[in-house]
Length: 432
Image 1 (tube, rainbow, N blue to C red):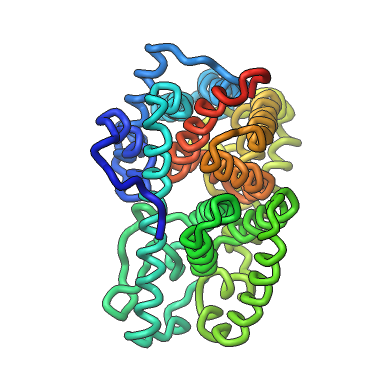
Image 2: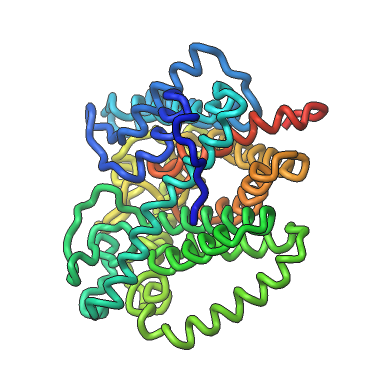
């Protein structure tokens, strides 16, 4: 169903190393080094990043601005420590340094042999898609053969949501705790990305296996609790239909909307018991971290900014206890981040940090705009999917930070990098 090259031996050890750095974060639990969380794929990615740095890389606008963004966060740990009564944590600059280095996996395509890039890219997309599909079929299996009544186990506590790859799962026909490792409601955003990628591959290459994969990831998104995933999918699909130049977009639009009507007509009672649909229908509580609490902590940031105007200029420094120490008002609980990538950057690093972050997004969007000029159909299809996904992805980060999450960043950057450096061959007159 999902594409992969037939002859695995044609991929070198270096190519497999890049593949592992992209897909292992989705398969493996975190472990702690000096109070900093790491995933095995991140360790491989950091080794690759240092290797690329030593070898020398041609900096483009996207990586240049992202580097400055993370560099400001890195230095904010040192120059703004007085906001925390002189308390300094060595783990925070190391964590910032990890984020600076990992962006260099974008240059994986630069160091791959030309004939190997496409094989590596297909493998990365294939292996990253597998756990979503397996888990989705396992949910279907439990519906069909175990008869689990999910309404008895639904909870609005985000730690116990019955969702795709979260703390509680369907095991042997019953609800079982599977641990906190590898859990994220933002996986819905990743489902959105992969769904749009496979739709773009289908409309470009006209292979039904990609359409099937696209539909499966639509289902996978439904069984997460990610409303930001739904937002990025809705905007992404709408934008994709606008920019797609094939006749398939019209038949697809009719198929999609008629299919959704039939799906909700016959299965609404089942799928509304948990996942995204249940979350949309359920009443919100004050401390639901997906809705009301976001408004509460954004209000705390504004009040903190009023009390400490200097925060707007330099931020309070990248530190886990920043919100609870600086932006607390009253006796209410405040988490260590603001559930908003852009407010986080302003709070941690100030207005210049936010500026470089926004310029990074703009350069990323401009880079993806060049997809029509790419000769290779497979690359062009994926880059078109990335381009369609970016507006919704940008808005989704107003309700979280899925751009720098451990599960997704190395995968996203390597996919972009492989296409970018191969495309430079076919787009010589104009830099992208």
